[in-house]
Length: 156
Image 1 (cartoon, rainbow, N blue to C red):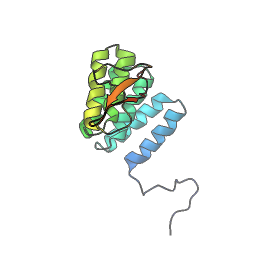
Image 2: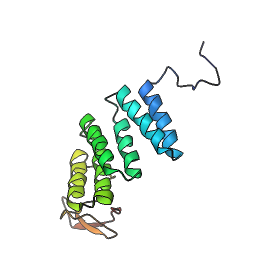
Image 3: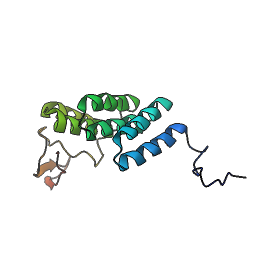
Image 4: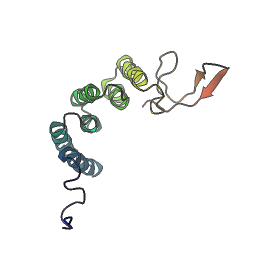
């Protein structure tokens, strides 16, 4: 029979320790306790070196704390785990753009995100001419037919 101890979470023994740490880290992050969140994300990344979300969210936690020097290696680690997911490239581009003040490097990360997942609706930050969009519209050309006007999310 299952352990119905109210002090034990229902997922105890069912999910990996790394994912349990990830859940704890997300609770700390949501509460605004960034040092605890970073410690838990780091522990989750050490517990499961193949868990993409742990370094991704550790980088995001460093970004929220305005620490690009700490965020960048975490994003690079997430990309090393799965280079075909766009999220780490996009988060890294956001961090560079807001904290590093290097639009060319940020643009490269956004382009890498598009290459990683070309059909993702998440990026939408780079126009056909490579410029980063800011509160304006961009003409998008379909492979067949006339140009279509599309709205893009802000970069910043």
